[in-house]
Image (cartoon, rainbow, N blue to C red; front, side, top):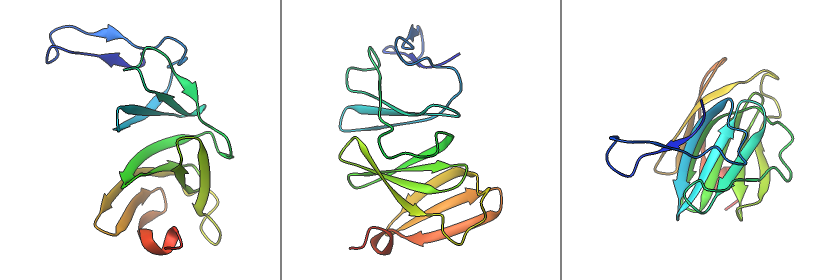
Length: 136
């Protein structure tokens, strides 16, 4: 399948998989006219032209199994099979959690509310303060 765009409330759909190799797209989020697509194996891809072209954005990302994406301010968080990662400056990733947690964490869902990020994982529920994670 992959990614499709509708500009008419779902009446018609346009294929947006060019250069994305869209198999196994697991999550999407948009921020300031940029679309982030997470793939089960392939990491994160970014489009700034409504999906007409996609660029891999995996510099510093060591785990390419991306299951979930959430946004807080100008930060994009990705949930992988072992960590929650913070995506900053549209290209770089900073590992936020992972040490001391189960190695097979599998962060399937992420949500942000106020100053906390919530993660639904294969090992249970985790709540973390974003300010502390980012060292602010």
